[in-house]
Amino acid sequence: MRQYVTHQLEILTLRSLELANRVAAGQLPLIDAVDLAYEAAVWADLTNTVGDDVVQTIIGTAFLTARLP
Image 1: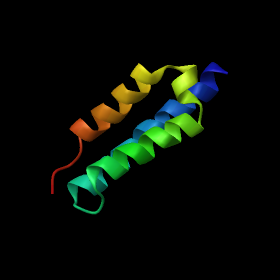
Image 2: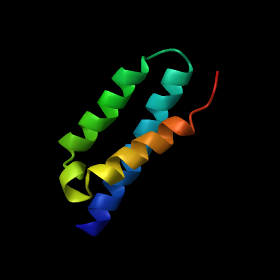
Image 3: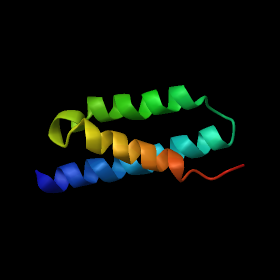
């Protein structure tokens, strides 16, 4: 189970980075991108498995490190 959760967190990280880069490129509004990432985490049950704080930290870090246009 631990390996599965680790894999899901890796996917959330990568997808959050992709969304953040789309925001930085002006292709997607910030609020929509964050909502998409968070809803994906809820759908994958990560908010219950690892907690809301971990999910929000992953998403927030991704958006802080997004490439600038």
